[in-house]
Image (cartoon, rainbow, N blue to C red; front, top):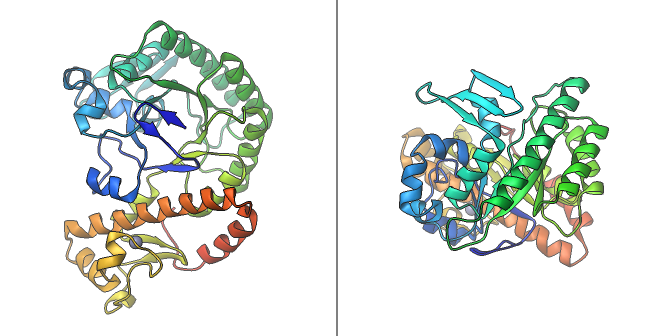
Length: 361
Ligand SMILES: [Zn+2]
């Protein structure tokens, strides 16, 4: 996937940098890890520091000092999940800031303007992310609204060009909860409107994992092969393996970063909880097969000590390793896809990953 801030190899995992920062890691570490694209969030950045500061800084890339691609979420998801006081109408969604209770309106047009001003390489349309469970009737009505909003986002996107010296792309978002026919309708209508890429939203919200895979297959069948597909908010290493097999290209999730900060680390043979007493004098690296900075220099015992002592370095080292693991997983997938041995390798990986301790999902 080409952007003016560089190419993104797919399939790819995008670390979450909600506030313009991937929690607990410096940009130079992200670069060292081979991170090619990060996420920012329009809702959070719009509320704080606010668009005036971003505009004055010359856009998000300059403000945060990141020269590679950035994708911003429109903020719809946060409006629906973070704020309790909200009103959804055709014109847009009225909500109260989770910071100070002030009232704001996000419309399809305003989220395009906000993301133009942020200067994201990839912008997302405004959508309603339906909760789970969700009645068929609600899913269908909500999806109709999401499609009307998608059309208005596209119009606003075409009317109003980029603010900075680089181009921007706009992705549509397939909704429709767990209902095949609503998902199909949603994907078909979005393709008709025409976007640079397509996201599948409203999954990984509590539905059974088999349902998530089934809906990914439904979307895969409708969405154009030559455009990137982005499965939003997913997921565990096993989810990534299964979803790539089902034609998904891009992923974002707080799991590697959030779990890392909670002493939960991913390894090639399953997850570990570094707070466990069994690691007290375990002088092996977190993952003996990993070549990241953490695994090359430190032991499980040291990381456990840092977590016990509530040292900031614990969060940094665990996050670095977890991101290294996710990026390694994606790199391996790209390799075995090209070698034509994805399926056999996937089965082998799934068996290995099912070892270890239970992880926070
Ligand atoms: Zn490592």
